[in-house]
Structure formats: structure tokens, C-alpha cells
Length: 185
Image 1 (cartoon, rainbow, N blue to C red):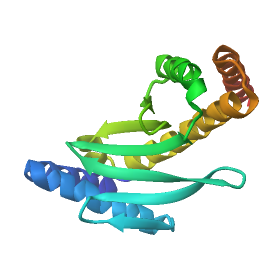
Image 2 (cartoon, rainbow, N blue to C red):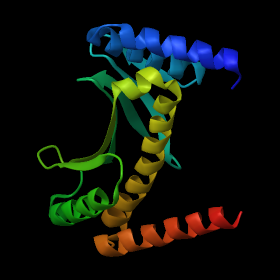
Image 3 (cartoon, rainbow, N blue to C red):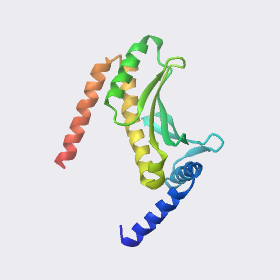
């Protein structure tokens, strides 16, 4: 980045910081909508409730609604990774969710027993997105990549009746192999 672009970025950041607290949320919300338009993503914008719904294929032939929101000073990403799980698997669902929550650096896997679904949620303080627009896109990508792994894990639990510990062990092995390949390149 050349000096002129750095100066422009600095002035933009100072201007954004100088705005009042409510304006910060408004700016991040506008940036989020612009990001979806610029990326060409098919999405629905819900102005009154301030969220965006975007459909992504989470597994071949299976789509999921990803929700992006700005509220309570945070930029949030949320997706249901498992809907309507069998009641008899509730204990294993909690065990697998707990394994993920112990491993995740960002976000949390939550289990809603009443409506029988599992969600993955990640949030980042809006000041980060306010000052560094690329961070919003990186959070969306991190959320999607992690959601794909979580979705696959819960599908193995529900469809294949695989034990949570084995699912997590296999996932860790897979990620270690991926990291090793990246180091070799």
C-alpha cells in the first residue's frame, strides 16, 4: 500500500472513530450490506430487524441460511448446523457441542433443546469491522469454513451414529494433515 492510500485509510479510520456510538453500528451495517452486494451474494436484507440472510450450500445438495447481524456493539454470524435432531441423541449432541466449544478459538456451538437444533455463532466487536473492513469478510469466511466442519460432524453423529469422541479425533487428524501440507508447500 503506497503512502497516499495509507493516508486515505488513516483519515477514513479517524473519521469513523470520531462518529458517535450509534453511528458506528450504522456504518458497520452499511458496510455489511455493501459487502454482500460487491461479492455478488444472493441475499435478503431485513432493514427493520437489521440482519442479512444468505443461503450457502453447506454440503452437496444441502443449503443452509447464514445470518449476519450488527447489534449490541458486535458483528454477528449465525447458522443452524443441525435442525430437528432426534431426542434420543440429546446427550451425544451436547457432548459433541462441548468438544467443539473446547476446541474453537472463535465462536460457540449452542444446543437448543426446546426446538431441537444446533447453531454455530461467532461475533466480533464492531470497532474491528469499523476500522478494518476486510476483517468483516474474514469473519464471514472463518464462520463458513468452521460451520461446514461442524455440520459434517453433526451429520456423522445423527446419520452414522458415530461416537462424538471419534468424530472429534477424526476432525483433528484431518486438520493436522491440512496444516502439515500447508507447511510443506
